[in-house]
Image 1 (cartoon, one colour):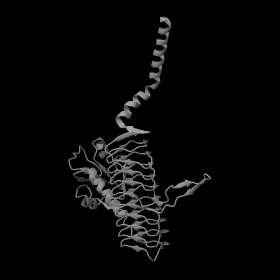
Image 2 (image 1 turned 30 degrees about the vertical axis):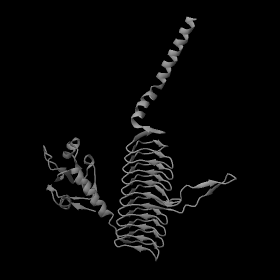
Image 3 (image 1 turned 120 degrees about the vertical axis):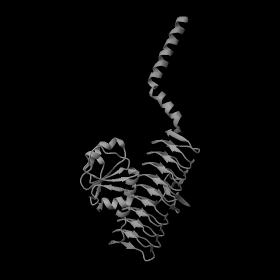
Image 4 (image 1 turned 180 degrees about the horizontal axis):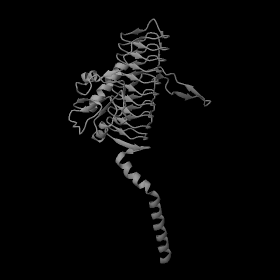
Length: 346
């Protein structure tokens, strides 16, 4: 797709300095800008690059004062960073605004699909599926029986959505995500052999949820595994059966949450965090990367470590841990001196 400076200025309500017909078809960093690319300048540290960049169009703040001429066409706006972000959002909307049905695909006769849909090649839509308006389902995706998907969702390539799953509006599910597979439920018999516990529940995902590539969300044993409104999950996250994640919680990559744990609202959880099962974690938590959570947490706690404990205490303890060899040497030296003194006293 190509855009002119005039078109971009209209979208951003900006003023053009230079050629209004300058065209761009790609994005670039200002220091790496080439002809045909669009970039932006908001950080004063990068001002020198405005004079050397080869980008065809550069978005800048209105307040920027130039010391010499530039070759790039400028679009002046109130806030270059926000305007560039707005443009990226617009670009994604245009890029993802596909419609129609490719071939081959399978769509059950009992499926209901709203207007403005896009269904990519080799996709499967099962029985009694209900899909809202403006939903985009990219190639090689699977949507099982009785699944409900709301309006304005994007399901990227290779996503597998098992039966009975419910997905709200404005959700984005990235490639390789698996939603609704069986929870890890097995019980040993008298012979010590593990028998599978049927997983008869489902997964419920509310509005405005983002799920990163390669993540898995297991169906509940009974009831629902629930991802509340506004949750953002990074790549390669495991959410086990009957977990509930509170609204507006964000979780970084490679975190695992064991079965039946409840995570509160507005929490921030770092990468590679391990959370044990059947816990209740409060609201507004801050859990540092690579922490191991093995007990309930109250609202507003910040924790680190494995097993995790108070963040401030952890940092103080870590200083002592790093000095542990010196501390042991000092203790050994004092012990030796005391023993020597005792011998002399005798």
